[in-house]
Amino acid sequence: MKNKNGKKIISIRARLFFEVGAVILVAVSFILSLNYFLLPTIYTYNEKQKMKNVCKDIDNYLADGVNPSGYFSSLEKENGFSIDVYQKDGNPLYIGTEDIFYASGKVTVSQREDYDDGSFFEVQTNPKSNKQYIVYGAELMSGGEVELFSSKEYIDNTARIAVMITNATSVTALLLALVFIYFYTGRFTKPLIAMSEITGKMAKMDFSEKCSFERNDEIGVLSSSINYLSDSLNTTLNDLNLKNEKLKEDIEKEKNLEKIRKEFISNVSHELKTPISIIRGYSEGAGLMLESGEIDGAKSYCDIIVNETEKMNALVLQLLELSKYESGNIEISKEEFDVAGMINDYAFGNEMKFNENGIKFENEIPNGLIGIGDTIKLGMVVNNYISNAVSHTSGDKIIKVSCEEIDDNYRVKVFNTGENISQEDIEKIWISFYRADKSRSRSEGRFGLGLSIVSAIQKLHKREYGVYNTDDGVCFWFDIEKAD
Image (cartoon, rainbow, N blue to C red; front, side, top):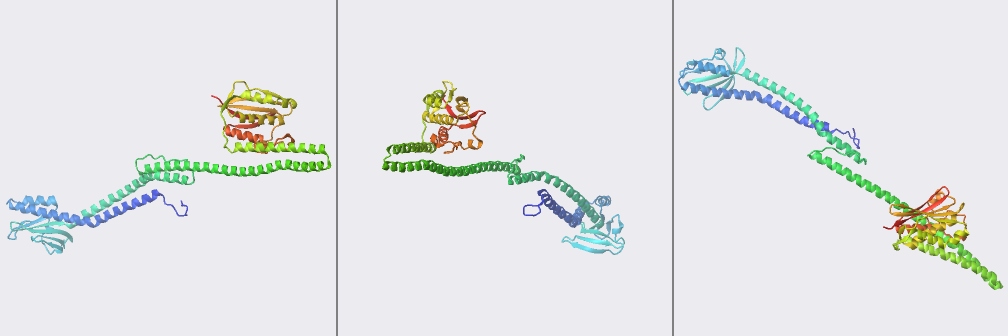
Protein backbone atom coordinates (compact mmCIF):
# COMPACT_ATOMS: atom_id res chain seq x y z
CA MET A 1 0.00 0.00 0.00
CA LYS A 2 1.19 3.53 -0.83
CA ASN A 3 0.14 6.95 0.41
CA LYS A 4 -0.72 9.99 -1.71
CA ASN A 5 2.97 10.90 -2.00
CA GLY A 6 3.80 7.47 -3.45
CA LYS A 7 5.64 6.29 -0.34
CA LYS A 8 5.12 2.72 0.85
CA ILE A 9 2.97 2.50 3.97
CA ILE A 10 3.96 0.09 6.74
CA SER A 11 0.92 -1.03 8.72
CA ILE A 12 0.79 0.06 12.35
CA ARG A 13 0.41 -3.57 13.39
CA ALA A 14 3.66 -4.58 11.65
CA ARG A 15 5.45 -1.51 12.99
CA LEU A 16 4.30 -2.15 16.55
CA PHE A 17 5.12 -5.87 16.27
CA PHE A 18 8.68 -5.26 15.01
CA GLU A 19 9.42 -2.45 17.44
CA VAL A 20 8.16 -4.26 20.57
CA GLY A 21 9.72 -7.51 19.33
CA ALA A 22 13.05 -5.73 18.80
CA VAL A 23 12.95 -4.34 22.36
CA ILE A 24 12.28 -7.80 23.80
CA LEU A 25 14.95 -9.35 21.56
CA VAL A 26 17.54 -6.82 22.75
CA ALA A 27 16.55 -7.45 26.37
CA VAL A 28 16.80 -11.23 25.97
CA SER A 29 20.14 -10.90 24.15
CA PHE A 30 21.44 -8.72 26.97
CA ILE A 31 20.33 -11.26 29.58
CA LEU A 32 21.92 -14.13 27.64
CA SER A 33 25.18 -12.20 27.33
CA LEU A 34 25.23 -11.49 31.05
CA ASN A 35 24.55 -15.14 31.82
CA TYR A 36 27.32 -16.31 29.47
CA PHE A 37 29.93 -14.00 30.92
CA LEU A 38 28.82 -13.73 34.55
CA LEU A 39 27.40 -17.13 35.53
CA PRO A 40 30.82 -18.91 35.73
CA THR A 41 32.14 -16.04 37.84
CA ILE A 42 29.05 -16.08 40.06
CA TYR A 43 29.22 -19.84 40.53
CA THR A 44 32.95 -19.61 41.37
CA TYR A 45 32.24 -16.77 43.82
CA ASN A 46 29.49 -18.78 45.53
CA GLU A 47 31.79 -21.80 45.74
CA LYS A 48 34.49 -19.71 47.37
CA GLN A 49 32.01 -18.28 49.90
CA LYS A 50 30.83 -21.79 50.71
CA MET A 51 34.44 -22.91 51.21
CA LYS A 52 35.03 -20.00 53.59
CA ASN A 53 31.93 -20.90 55.59
CA VAL A 54 32.91 -24.59 55.77
CA CYS A 55 36.39 -23.57 56.97
CA LYS A 56 34.82 -21.51 59.78
CA ASP A 57 32.63 -24.46 60.75
CA ILE A 58 35.72 -26.73 60.89
CA ASP A 59 37.61 -24.20 63.00
CA ASN A 60 34.71 -23.92 65.45
CA TYR A 61 34.26 -27.68 65.55
CA LEU A 62 37.95 -28.38 66.32
CA ALA A 63 37.88 -25.76 69.07
CA ASP A 64 35.37 -27.95 70.94
CA GLY A 65 37.92 -30.84 71.02
CA VAL A 66 35.65 -33.45 69.44
CA ASN A 67 36.94 -36.32 67.28
CA PRO A 68 36.61 -34.90 63.77
CA SER A 69 36.90 -37.98 61.56
CA GLY A 70 33.23 -38.60 60.93
CA TYR A 71 32.52 -34.89 60.81
CA PHE A 72 35.04 -34.17 58.02
CA SER A 73 33.74 -37.06 55.94
CA SER A 74 30.15 -35.81 56.21
CA LEU A 75 31.27 -32.29 55.22
CA GLU A 76 32.96 -33.67 52.12
CA LYS A 77 29.86 -35.57 51.06
CA GLU A 78 27.57 -32.64 51.85
CA ASN A 79 29.57 -29.96 49.98
CA GLY A 80 31.50 -31.96 47.38
CA PHE A 81 34.85 -30.79 48.73
CA SER A 82 37.99 -32.72 49.59
CA ILE A 83 39.28 -31.58 52.99
CA ASP A 84 42.87 -31.79 54.31
CA VAL A 85 43.49 -30.76 57.94
CA TYR A 86 46.97 -30.40 59.47
CA GLN A 87 47.90 -30.04 63.12
CA LYS A 88 50.09 -27.33 64.57
CA ASP A 89 53.20 -29.51 64.20
CA GLY A 90 52.44 -30.13 60.52
CA ASN A 91 51.21 -33.70 60.89
CA PRO A 92 47.98 -34.46 59.03
CA LEU A 93 44.85 -34.62 61.18
CA TYR A 94 42.57 -35.62 58.28
CA ILE A 95 43.32 -36.27 54.66
CA GLY A 96 40.56 -36.10 52.10
CA THR A 97 39.07 -39.22 50.61
CA GLU A 98 40.24 -38.30 47.10
CA ASP A 99 43.99 -38.88 47.05
CA ILE A 100 44.37 -36.91 43.87
CA PHE A 101 44.42 -33.81 46.02
CA TYR A 102 47.23 -35.14 48.14
CA ALA A 103 50.68 -34.04 47.16
CA SER A 104 52.04 -36.89 45.09
CA GLY A 105 53.96 -34.76 42.72
CA LYS A 106 54.12 -31.21 41.57
CA VAL A 107 50.99 -29.17 41.08
CA THR A 108 50.73 -26.10 38.87
CA VAL A 109 49.28 -22.96 40.45
CA SER A 110 47.66 -20.74 37.78
CA GLN A 111 45.96 -18.21 40.07
CA ARG A 112 46.47 -17.17 43.70
CA GLU A 113 44.69 -14.68 45.95
CA ASP A 114 46.19 -13.91 49.39
CA TYR A 115 44.28 -12.22 52.21
CA ASP A 116 45.47 -10.30 55.30
CA ASP A 117 44.37 -13.04 57.69
CA GLY A 118 46.77 -15.50 56.01
CA SER A 119 44.09 -17.31 54.00
CA PHE A 120 44.37 -17.77 50.28
CA PHE A 121 42.69 -19.06 47.16
CA GLU A 122 44.53 -20.91 44.44
CA VAL A 123 43.64 -22.57 41.19
CA GLN A 124 45.76 -25.70 40.97
CA THR A 125 46.17 -28.09 38.07
CA ASN A 126 46.81 -31.78 38.76
CA PRO A 127 49.49 -32.85 36.26
CA LYS A 128 48.31 -36.47 36.28
CA SER A 129 44.67 -35.82 35.37
CA ASN A 130 45.18 -32.31 33.93
CA LYS A 131 42.19 -31.15 35.97
CA GLN A 132 41.89 -27.85 37.78
CA TYR A 133 40.78 -27.37 41.37
CA ILE A 134 39.94 -24.36 43.49
CA VAL A 135 41.96 -24.58 46.71
CA TYR A 136 41.19 -22.58 49.84
CA GLY A 137 43.73 -22.59 52.64
CA ALA A 138 43.48 -20.95 56.05
CA GLU A 139 45.04 -21.14 59.52
CA LEU A 140 43.01 -22.66 62.36
CA MET A 141 42.59 -21.09 65.77
CA SER A 142 44.34 -24.18 67.20
CA GLY A 143 47.42 -23.32 65.17
CA GLY A 144 46.90 -25.92 62.48
CA GLU A 145 45.92 -25.44 58.85
CA VAL A 146 43.07 -26.55 56.60
CA GLU A 147 42.89 -26.87 52.84
CA LEU A 148 39.65 -27.31 50.89
CA PHE A 149 39.67 -28.64 47.32
CA SER A 150 36.74 -28.17 44.87
CA SER A 151 36.72 -29.28 41.25
CA LYS A 152 36.75 -26.22 38.99
CA GLU A 153 35.59 -28.39 36.12
CA TYR A 154 32.45 -29.26 38.06
CA ILE A 155 31.78 -25.57 38.74
CA ASP A 156 32.35 -24.66 35.09
CA ASN A 157 30.09 -27.50 33.90
CA THR A 158 27.38 -26.43 36.34
CA ALA A 159 27.67 -22.85 35.10
CA ARG A 160 27.63 -24.06 31.49
CA ILE A 161 24.48 -26.12 32.09
CA ALA A 162 22.86 -23.12 33.81
CA VAL A 163 23.73 -20.97 30.79
CA MET A 164 22.24 -23.55 28.41
CA ILE A 165 19.05 -23.83 30.47
CA THR A 166 18.81 -20.02 30.66
CA ASN A 167 19.36 -19.72 26.91
CA ALA A 168 16.70 -22.32 26.15
CA THR A 169 14.14 -20.82 28.49
CA SER A 170 14.94 -17.29 27.25
CA VAL A 171 14.55 -18.25 23.57
CA THR A 172 11.33 -20.12 24.37
CA ALA A 173 10.04 -17.12 26.30
CA LEU A 174 11.06 -14.85 23.39
CA LEU A 175 9.13 -16.97 20.87
CA LEU A 176 6.07 -17.09 23.13
CA ALA A 177 6.34 -13.34 23.66
CA LEU A 178 6.52 -12.75 19.90
CA VAL A 179 3.42 -14.90 19.36
CA PHE A 180 1.62 -13.00 22.13
CA ILE A 181 2.76 -9.67 20.71
CA TYR A 182 1.55 -10.64 17.25
CA PHE A 183 -1.98 -11.37 18.43
CA TYR A 184 -1.99 -8.52 20.94
CA THR A 185 -0.88 -5.98 18.34
CA GLY A 186 -3.70 -7.22 16.09
CA ARG A 187 -6.20 -6.67 18.88
CA PHE A 188 -4.62 -3.36 19.87
CA THR A 189 -4.35 -1.94 16.35
CA LYS A 190 -7.70 -3.19 15.04
CA PRO A 191 -9.66 -0.10 16.23
CA LEU A 192 -6.88 2.20 14.99
CA ILE A 193 -6.95 0.60 11.53
CA ALA A 194 -10.75 0.84 11.48
CA MET A 195 -10.60 4.51 12.53
CA SER A 196 -8.01 5.13 9.82
CA GLU A 197 -10.37 3.67 7.19
CA ILE A 198 -13.29 5.72 8.53
CA THR A 199 -11.29 8.97 8.53
CA GLY A 200 -10.15 8.11 4.98
CA LYS A 201 -13.80 7.95 3.94
CA MET A 202 -14.44 11.20 5.81
CA ALA A 203 -11.70 12.80 3.71
CA LYS A 204 -13.73 11.74 0.65
CA MET A 205 -16.86 13.33 2.19
CA ASP A 206 -18.38 9.96 3.10
CA PHE A 207 -19.76 10.20 6.65
CA SER A 208 -21.89 7.04 6.57
CA GLU A 209 -19.71 4.92 8.87
CA LYS A 210 -19.16 5.50 12.59
CA CYS A 211 -16.62 4.18 15.11
CA SER A 212 -18.15 1.60 17.45
CA PHE A 213 -15.34 1.16 19.98
CA GLU A 214 -16.77 1.85 23.41
CA ARG A 215 -13.70 1.82 25.64
CA ASN A 216 -12.71 3.77 28.73
CA ASP A 217 -9.27 4.73 27.42
CA GLU A 218 -7.75 7.12 24.90
CA ILE A 219 -8.91 4.94 21.98
CA GLY A 220 -12.49 5.22 23.23
CA VAL A 221 -12.09 9.00 23.54
CA LEU A 222 -10.60 9.16 20.03
CA SER A 223 -13.48 7.04 18.68
CA SER A 224 -16.05 9.40 20.22
CA SER A 225 -14.15 12.44 18.92
CA ILE A 226 -14.09 11.01 15.37
CA ASN A 227 -17.83 10.34 15.52
CA TYR A 228 -18.46 13.88 16.80
CA LEU A 229 -16.20 15.31 14.09
CA SER A 230 -17.98 13.19 11.45
CA ASP A 231 -21.41 14.44 12.56
CA SER A 232 -20.18 18.05 12.75
CA LEU A 233 -18.57 17.88 9.30
CA ASN A 234 -21.64 16.19 7.84
CA THR A 235 -23.94 18.83 9.33
CA THR A 236 -21.66 21.63 8.19
CA LEU A 237 -21.33 20.16 4.71
CA ASN A 238 -25.09 19.74 4.38
CA ASP A 239 -25.55 23.29 5.60
CA LEU A 240 -22.99 24.51 3.08
CA ASN A 241 -24.70 22.55 0.32
CA LEU A 242 -28.05 24.05 1.26
CA LYS A 243 -26.56 27.52 1.36
CA ASN A 244 -24.80 26.86 -1.93
CA GLU A 245 -28.08 25.75 -3.50
CA LYS A 246 -29.80 28.79 -2.01
CA LEU A 247 -27.03 30.98 -3.40
CA LYS A 248 -27.43 29.40 -6.82
CA GLU A 249 -31.16 29.97 -6.61
CA ASP A 250 -30.61 33.57 -5.55
CA ILE A 251 -28.16 34.12 -8.40
CA GLU A 252 -30.59 32.52 -10.85
CA LYS A 253 -33.42 34.57 -9.36
CA GLU A 254 -31.32 37.72 -9.69
CA LYS A 255 -30.65 36.88 -13.34
CA ASN A 256 -34.33 36.27 -13.92
CA LEU A 257 -35.23 39.50 -12.15
CA GLU A 258 -32.74 41.38 -14.29
CA LYS A 259 -34.22 39.71 -17.38
CA ILE A 260 -37.74 40.55 -16.21
CA ARG A 261 -36.70 44.12 -15.48
CA LYS A 262 -35.34 44.52 -18.99
CA GLU A 263 -38.41 42.88 -20.48
CA PHE A 264 -40.61 45.09 -18.30
CA ILE A 265 -38.92 48.26 -19.54
CA SER A 266 -39.13 46.98 -23.10
CA ASN A 267 -42.81 46.09 -22.70
CA VAL A 268 -43.70 49.42 -21.06
CA SER A 269 -41.87 51.23 -23.82
CA HIS A 270 -43.71 49.19 -26.41
CA GLU A 271 -47.10 49.69 -24.74
CA LEU A 272 -46.57 53.47 -24.51
CA LYS A 273 -44.96 53.82 -27.91
CA THR A 274 -48.12 52.80 -29.81
CA PRO A 275 -50.59 55.21 -28.15
CA ILE A 276 -48.04 58.01 -28.22
CA SER A 277 -47.54 57.49 -31.95
CA ILE A 278 -51.32 57.40 -32.47
CA ILE A 279 -51.82 60.53 -30.38
CA ARG A 280 -49.06 62.33 -32.26
CA GLY A 281 -50.42 61.31 -35.67
CA TYR A 282 -54.03 62.20 -34.89
CA SER A 283 -52.97 65.46 -33.23
CA GLU A 284 -51.18 66.53 -36.41
CA GLY A 285 -54.19 65.42 -38.48
CA ALA A 286 -56.61 67.28 -36.23
CA GLY A 287 -54.49 70.44 -36.59
CA LEU A 288 -54.52 70.19 -40.35
CA MET A 289 -58.30 69.61 -40.36
CA LEU A 290 -58.86 72.66 -38.16
CA GLU A 291 -56.78 74.76 -40.55
CA SER A 292 -58.88 73.53 -43.49
CA GLY A 293 -62.15 74.03 -41.62
CA GLU A 294 -63.06 70.32 -41.25
CA ILE A 295 -64.48 70.62 -37.75
CA ASP A 296 -66.28 67.25 -37.67
CA GLY A 297 -63.16 65.37 -38.80
CA ALA A 298 -61.01 67.17 -36.22
CA LYS A 299 -63.54 66.31 -33.49
CA SER A 300 -63.42 62.63 -34.52
CA TYR A 301 -59.60 62.69 -34.28
CA CYS A 302 -59.81 64.30 -30.85
CA ASP A 303 -62.11 61.48 -29.66
CA ILE A 304 -59.48 58.94 -30.77
CA ILE A 305 -56.78 60.91 -28.92
CA VAL A 306 -58.89 60.94 -25.74
CA ASN A 307 -59.49 57.16 -26.05
CA GLU A 308 -55.75 56.48 -26.40
CA THR A 309 -55.03 58.79 -23.48
CA GLU A 310 -57.47 56.84 -21.30
CA LYS A 311 -55.72 53.60 -22.24
CA MET A 312 -52.36 55.14 -21.32
CA ASN A 313 -53.82 56.33 -18.04
CA ALA A 314 -55.20 52.84 -17.29
CA LEU A 315 -51.79 51.33 -18.05
CA VAL A 316 -49.97 53.77 -15.77
CA LEU A 317 -52.49 53.20 -12.97
CA GLN A 318 -52.05 49.41 -13.26
CA LEU A 319 -48.26 49.80 -13.25
CA LEU A 320 -48.42 51.97 -10.15
CA GLU A 321 -50.74 49.45 -8.48
CA LEU A 322 -48.46 46.54 -9.33
CA SER A 323 -45.35 48.44 -8.22
CA LYS A 324 -47.01 49.28 -4.93
CA TYR A 325 -47.87 45.61 -4.24
CA GLU A 326 -44.50 44.22 -5.30
CA SER A 327 -42.56 46.70 -3.17
CA GLY A 328 -43.81 44.94 -0.03
CA ASN A 329 -44.19 48.27 1.76
CA ILE A 330 -47.99 48.27 1.56
CA GLU A 331 -49.99 46.99 4.51
CA ILE A 332 -53.05 44.81 4.06
CA SER A 333 -56.11 45.01 6.26
CA LYS A 334 -57.56 41.93 7.93
CA GLU A 335 -61.34 41.69 8.00
CA GLU A 336 -63.87 38.89 7.87
CA PHE A 337 -66.13 38.53 4.84
CA ASP A 338 -68.45 36.03 3.20
CA VAL A 339 -66.63 34.38 0.29
CA ALA A 340 -69.81 33.63 -1.70
CA GLY A 341 -71.00 37.21 -1.13
CA MET A 342 -67.82 38.64 -2.68
CA ILE A 343 -68.34 36.53 -5.82
CA ASN A 344 -72.04 37.45 -6.03
CA ASP A 345 -71.23 41.17 -5.74
CA TYR A 346 -68.88 40.92 -8.72
CA ALA A 347 -71.39 38.86 -10.75
CA PHE A 348 -74.21 41.34 -10.08
CA GLY A 349 -72.06 44.29 -11.21
CA ASN A 350 -70.96 42.51 -14.41
CA GLU A 351 -74.20 40.77 -15.35
CA MET A 352 -74.52 42.93 -18.46
CA LYS A 353 -71.03 41.92 -19.63
CA PHE A 354 -71.91 38.23 -19.25
CA ASN A 355 -75.12 38.72 -21.24
CA GLU A 356 -73.40 40.67 -23.99
CA ASN A 357 -70.87 37.85 -24.50
CA GLY A 358 -73.38 35.03 -24.11
CA ILE A 359 -71.63 33.70 -21.02
CA LYS A 360 -73.34 31.52 -18.41
CA PHE A 361 -71.97 32.43 -14.96
CA GLU A 362 -72.34 29.96 -12.06
CA ASN A 363 -71.38 30.60 -8.42
CA GLU A 364 -71.30 27.23 -6.61
CA ILE A 365 -69.79 28.55 -3.38
CA PRO A 366 -72.25 28.02 -0.47
CA ASN A 367 -73.13 30.89 1.84
CA GLY A 368 -71.55 31.01 5.27
CA LEU A 369 -67.92 30.43 4.33
CA ILE A 370 -66.14 33.22 6.19
CA GLY A 371 -62.67 34.23 5.06
CA ILE A 372 -60.15 36.76 6.39
CA GLY A 373 -58.19 39.25 4.31
CA ASP A 374 -58.14 42.60 2.55
CA THR A 375 -61.52 42.61 0.77
CA ILE A 376 -60.56 45.38 -1.66
CA LYS A 377 -57.41 43.64 -2.84
CA LEU A 378 -59.00 40.18 -2.87
CA GLY A 379 -61.83 41.70 -4.88
CA MET A 380 -59.20 42.73 -7.45
CA VAL A 381 -58.06 39.09 -7.59
CA VAL A 382 -61.65 37.98 -8.28
CA ASN A 383 -62.06 40.77 -10.87
CA ASN A 384 -58.84 39.87 -12.72
CA TYR A 385 -59.58 36.12 -12.70
CA ILE A 386 -63.17 36.50 -13.97
CA SER A 387 -62.23 39.24 -16.47
CA ASN A 388 -59.55 36.94 -17.79
CA ALA A 389 -62.11 34.11 -18.01
CA VAL A 390 -64.54 36.38 -19.92
CA SER A 391 -61.82 37.17 -22.47
CA HIS A 392 -60.88 33.53 -23.04
CA THR A 393 -64.13 31.60 -22.66
CA SER A 394 -65.36 29.73 -25.74
CA GLY A 395 -67.35 26.64 -26.63
CA ASP A 396 -70.17 26.33 -24.11
CA LYS A 397 -69.12 29.73 -22.69
CA ILE A 398 -69.43 28.75 -19.04
CA ILE A 399 -67.68 30.45 -16.14
CA LYS A 400 -68.02 28.53 -12.90
CA VAL A 401 -66.72 29.57 -9.45
CA SER A 402 -66.36 26.88 -6.77
CA CYS A 403 -64.57 26.37 -3.46
CA GLU A 404 -62.98 23.63 -1.35
CA GLU A 405 -61.40 23.59 2.11
CA ILE A 406 -57.67 22.80 2.26
CA ASP A 407 -56.17 22.91 5.75
CA ASP A 408 -56.75 26.45 7.05
CA ASN A 409 -57.68 27.88 3.64
CA TYR A 410 -60.61 28.18 1.28
CA ARG A 411 -59.40 27.44 -2.23
CA VAL A 412 -61.52 29.49 -4.65
CA LYS A 413 -61.53 28.15 -8.23
CA VAL A 414 -62.54 30.14 -11.34
CA PHE A 415 -63.18 27.80 -14.28
CA ASN A 416 -63.97 28.75 -17.85
CA THR A 417 -64.60 26.59 -20.88
CA GLY A 418 -62.24 27.12 -23.77
CA GLU A 419 -58.79 26.24 -25.06
CA ASN A 420 -56.06 24.99 -22.74
CA ILE A 421 -52.98 27.08 -21.96
CA SER A 422 -49.79 25.61 -23.43
CA GLN A 423 -47.16 24.33 -20.98
CA GLU A 424 -44.71 26.95 -22.22
CA ASP A 425 -47.19 29.77 -21.52
CA ILE A 426 -48.56 28.40 -18.23
CA GLU A 427 -45.22 29.06 -16.52
CA LYS A 428 -44.99 32.64 -17.78
CA ILE A 429 -48.49 34.07 -17.51
CA TRP A 430 -47.70 35.58 -14.08
CA ILE A 431 -44.96 37.76 -15.60
CA SER A 432 -45.85 41.38 -16.26
CA PHE A 433 -46.91 42.18 -19.87
CA TYR A 434 -46.86 38.50 -20.85
CA ARG A 435 -49.88 37.55 -22.98
CA ALA A 436 -50.48 34.00 -24.08
CA ASP A 437 -52.96 35.20 -26.74
CA LYS A 438 -50.57 37.42 -28.69
CA SER A 439 -52.97 37.53 -31.64
CA ARG A 440 -55.64 39.43 -29.68
CA SER A 441 -55.93 43.16 -30.32
CA ARG A 442 -54.80 45.76 -27.77
CA SER A 443 -58.13 47.39 -28.41
CA GLU A 444 -59.56 45.16 -25.63
CA GLY A 445 -57.63 47.30 -23.15
CA ARG A 446 -55.65 44.41 -21.65
CA PHE A 447 -51.91 44.93 -21.03
CA GLY A 448 -50.90 41.60 -19.45
CA LEU A 449 -50.70 43.00 -15.88
CA GLY A 450 -53.80 41.45 -14.32
CA LEU A 451 -52.24 38.10 -13.33
CA SER A 452 -49.08 39.86 -12.13
CA ILE A 453 -51.28 41.90 -9.78
CA VAL A 454 -52.97 38.66 -8.61
CA SER A 455 -49.53 37.17 -7.83
CA ALA A 456 -48.45 40.27 -5.87
CA ILE A 457 -51.69 40.42 -3.83
CA GLN A 458 -51.52 36.72 -2.92
CA LYS A 459 -47.91 37.10 -1.84
CA LEU A 460 -48.95 40.00 0.40
CA HIS A 461 -51.51 37.67 2.00
CA LYS A 462 -48.91 34.85 2.13
CA ARG A 463 -51.32 32.52 0.35
CA GLU A 464 -50.94 30.21 -2.66
CA TYR A 465 -52.34 30.67 -6.18
CA GLY A 466 -52.08 28.91 -9.53
CA VAL A 467 -53.69 27.53 -12.68
CA TYR A 468 -54.20 24.17 -14.34
CA ASN A 469 -55.81 22.84 -17.52
CA THR A 470 -58.90 20.59 -17.55
CA ASP A 471 -60.42 18.47 -20.27
CA ASP A 472 -62.74 21.24 -21.44
CA GLY A 473 -61.13 24.43 -20.19
CA VAL A 474 -58.85 26.21 -17.74
CA CYS A 475 -59.13 26.67 -13.97
CA PHE A 476 -57.43 29.50 -12.04
CA TRP A 477 -57.38 29.29 -8.23
CA PHE A 478 -56.30 31.26 -5.16
CA ASP A 479 -56.38 30.62 -1.38
CA ILE A 480 -58.20 32.70 1.24
CA GLU A 481 -57.47 32.31 4.93
CA LYS A 482 -60.33 30.74 6.89
CA ALA A 483 -61.76 32.57 9.88
CA ASP A 484 -61.56 30.79 13.25
